[in-house]
Image (cartoon, rainbow, N blue to C red; front, side, top):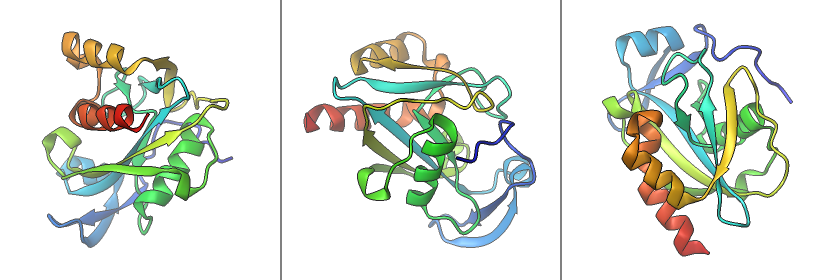
Length: 180
């Protein structure tokens, strides 16, 4: 498994997209973020058989939302990469879960806006009960939580959570509850 030794590289190349999520060019991570160009990302929420969700506390070395609680894994799409392939890659890189694309369930798509960091975001869920191996370059720590506890903590301390997780949590956690 490939695990980066640092939280992010400024020279990574991302697809730049238009308001309809169509590729219009490419730029480095640094340029995309500095110029607030529209680009793509994925978030995956991992739920166990007890219905708990695994959340990560982002490394303080991250360039956005350092030290905040976030989805089980999240990340940008590399240039030319599909959303589902990025989700599978991020699961392996960040929390050591190797899975097949067909095991992921697409739950929601967010449009690019200031509260998503100008990212179009596809959110997936995965049912998983195996070991998790966090990548310390990406994640400070991770924990399993009851969804109701996450909802309560978000209402009491919203700044402890990334804006993207806050934006999609209610819809995704509700869908998981109705699936059980």
